[in-house]
Image (cartoon, rainbow, N blue to C red; front, top):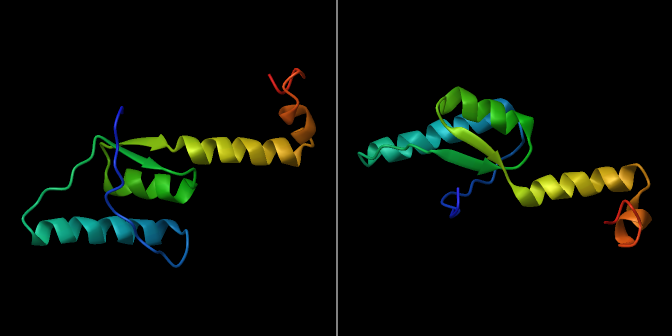
Length: 97
């Protein structure tokens, strides 16, 4: 996936699997009402496991890709959690390289 563009934004009340499934099914219905077919080669999302499960349930043949921003954000949270922030910021340290 060399290029991508955000095409839809939803403000959701929670991060539950059912909420994500309902959102995707609502999107499919919007496309159907306009006689359009909604198909994706890949969907780029964050690391929420519930959204991954919902995509697999609704779009079985679609590849799921994790957003690099959210992936590196999760890594950095783990670096902070285990107390390696100073080493990570020190580019001369083994951790910071």
